[in-house]
Amino acid sequence: MTEPKSPIRQTGNGRLPGDLSRDEMIERIIRVDHAGEYGAVRIYQGQMAILKKSASAKTLHHMTEQEKKHLETFEKLAVERRVRPTLLTPIWHAAGFALGAGTALLGEKAAMACTQAVEEVIDEHYADQAAKLGDDEKDLRDTIEKFRAEEIEHRDAAVAAGAEEAPGHAVLTGAIKTGSRLAIWLSERI
Image (tube, rainbow, N blue to C red; front, side, top):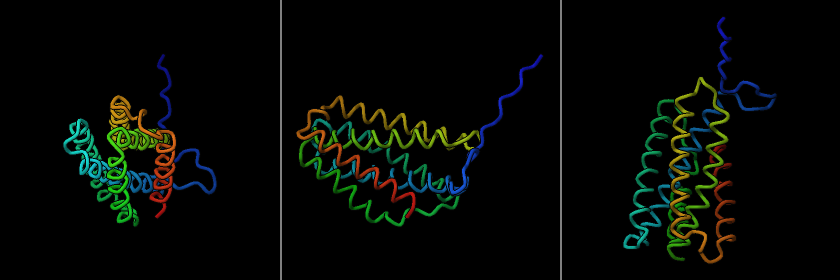
């Protein structure tokens, strides 16, 4: 006797009135993830501009290269799926670099606290997205899960490098997390 196959979970199943359509959800996911990866590259570029000769330089370079690959992936997906980028890209260009450079000017541990805060928000964000994607979007879900694992790696590296020893750690990371969540909300919609 064969066991019945479990039903294939489709993206958008279980939608309620007023929820985004499947296509609108995918569009938002690609738009916001493109914006987020763009912002992450800019944050690391800002940190590298200040900390290029520091003990953290090698770690920052590694994280920057991974974020660039993430960005390239979402750039390709945006073209393939005809998703326009957020209109806020010029703001994220300046704000990302300023956040990276500003926290680096406070010291290596503050820069690592910035990384920790941003990556904790991205971990939650990617987990939420992956949970919403069905088997019909397995490739996108797998990409998000792969990138999520690398973002967790970045967070763990930041903690190992002393992020939690940064002066004013709770206030600094709290402000960065709030800003990151606001940037996500705005980038999904604008």
